[in-house]
Image (cartoon, rainbow, N blue to C red; front, top):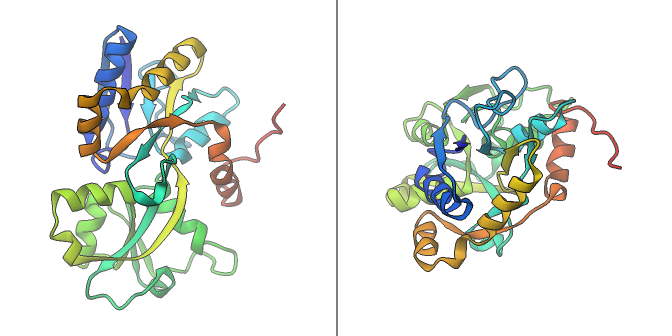
Length: 273
């Protein structure tokens, strides 16, 4: 049995990952069990790592977590060389996504910079779209962590949106695919929220496998790259916003790795051989 875990729901619909693991089970000829971890977007320093002790084999997580886990002296995961390409027209078929800076429709802010000195919300401290994308814009020695008057952890992208709507926070940065999914579910949000700035594009959330089985990794990648070959499956995936999977490699994450090194989140990487 292959044990899979997603750290990306409910922002990205759980149904998407259920469809993906069902496809993998058929293609690999083995049972694949999926669990959803909603406490954070992936393990970071000091967090429980289910890949290290074999409780999880396959993972869907945010790139800061992957970059941290793969930077360890004994990495617990490795990148599956296939990634999601969502149906956002800005993506042009690429494995990327954006971070949407949102405010209430009535808010006068016209850009992220206009939220200086106000209350900011974020889903969790591992999230690229909700947390690090913004720190990369505003965190510097000159600002000394005082750009916002207060930062509030909401627990999820959906909770960040609700906190903007009820006035607990003034703004938040939301995974573009999560926001598009919510707009499909709740069209009224388009009238209640306003995107004042789009940050990115950023590398898509990686799919990882517990380190040590390159053959299985390559079989999983091949199965993922064939996702869109099945017409019925393609239609179901499209309803979740996904077009297909495309090839990815380590280079896709180089820019984000450098940004996290600059923020002091990751150690300086050793030169590649």
